[in-house]
Image 1 (cartoon, rainbow, N blue to C red):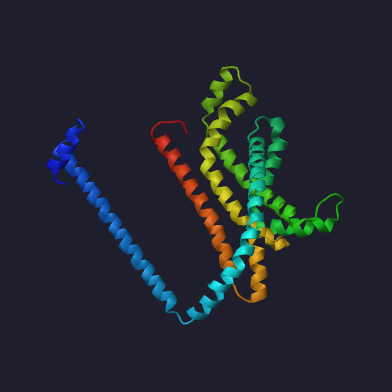
Image 2: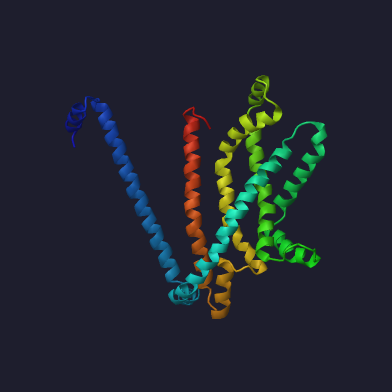
Length: 294
C-alpha cells in the first residue's frame, strides 16, 4: 500500500495523518517484521546446532534409551499424574497457610514501641533461622525427627509433616515479602490516617495493608511458583507424590524416563503460573508509569 492509499483510507475515517507520520509507521512495521525474521532465523539455527551436537554425541543412543524412552514414558505417565494430585493439594493447603502466617509474622516484625521488642525479636529470629536453613534439612527433621519424639497426639504422616516443613520455611520468605511491602508505604500515609482519627490498627488495616499487598503481588506469586516445585521434596519422607511415583518405576525398571516425565509435568504446571506472574507484574508497572493506583 502506497502513502497515497493509506492517506485515502485514513481520510475515509475522518482523520488525515501526514505523509511523514504514515512513512514513520510503515518504517516501524518493516523494522518489526525484520526483527521477527532475524529472531526466528537465529532460533532455528541455535536449535539445529544443539540438535546436531546432542544427536551426534557418542552416547546419545544409550542416553535416549535411558532418559527418553517412549515405552517407559507411557508406563510412567498415569502414575506420575496420579501422584501429582498430592502435590497440587499440598500447594493449595500450604499456600493458604503460608500467606496468612507470613502476613502475621510481617505484622509482628513491624510493631512499633519498646513494649513489643520481644515479639519483634522472636519474629526476626524465626525469619532469619528458616530463611537460612535448607528446606530439605527442615523436611528431614520434621518427617524423621518429630516421630522419633513419640509425642502423644502428634501425627506421623509424612505428608502432614512435610507440609508443615514447607509452611515453616516459606512463611519466613513470604513474611519478608509482606514486610517489604508494608515498609514501602510512605510514612505520610500513616500520618494522614492518624490525623483523620484512625487508630494504629485501623491505619494498618485500611490504609497500609491494601497498598502493601498490591505492591508485592508479583513477588508473592513467584514464591507460590517455587512452593509448587518444592512440594516434590515431601517424597523423601515416603509420600507418594509425582516424584516418588517416578522413583518407584525407575527403581523397578532401571530406567530414568519416569523422572523426565515428572519433571515435564511440573514444568507444564509452572509455566502458566510464571506467565501469569509476568502479566501481573507488567500490568502493575504500566499502571504505575501512567500514574494509576499501584
